[in-house]
Image (cartoon, rainbow, N blue to C red; front, side, top):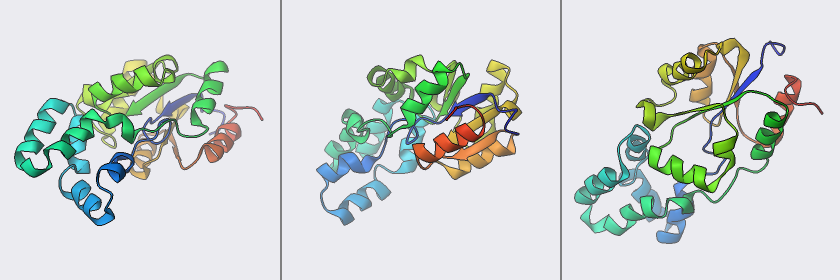
Amino acid sequence: MSQSITHVVFDIGNVLIEWNPEYLYCDLIPDNEERQKFLDTVCTPDWNLQQDLGRSWDEAIELLSAQHPDKVELIHAYSERWHDMVPGEVSGTPALLAELKEKGVPLYAITNFSSEKFVEAQDRFSFLKSSFLDIVVSAEERLLKPDPQIYKVLFERNKLDPANCIFIDDSLANVAAARALGMAGHHFTSAHILEKELTDLGLLVR
């Protein structure tokens, strides 16, 4: 299999750039129990995913603020201070991305991301603009990983054979979906472990 892997497909959040609402809300809601309750019942993961599916942030904030009028400022902060949830790059991974690009490895990405915030992320992290031959953004396709269709968008748009691709994601479910479609899969936990796999596959030389 190692000889057949020629293309690398990255996830972005928590593989190349960090993202966690806790970074913001630790500041806004210092009490651990209160903060967890807010993130579990108000600005929930499911609510955030609707923006990754294409709902605008203006609509999302308006709807949630109407449901929780006592939490309006905290809800607005999720969008207005979004960059506080993204403190920087994931250590080591952008360097591996740059090395792969320098070696001429074809690079792609599939990401669950809102269109609005992805533009902001690209403005902030230039490698998100310059590294990839194509990026499949969930909000633009109205599809979310691990739906098989979002992977098929990448294959069909770029005429890729899944057997030639390795997919890197911090979500096991997303990696499992990629493997089910014939891709090699890497469950990302650290740049060091990823570097070893890419080296074993012959995509990097050490």
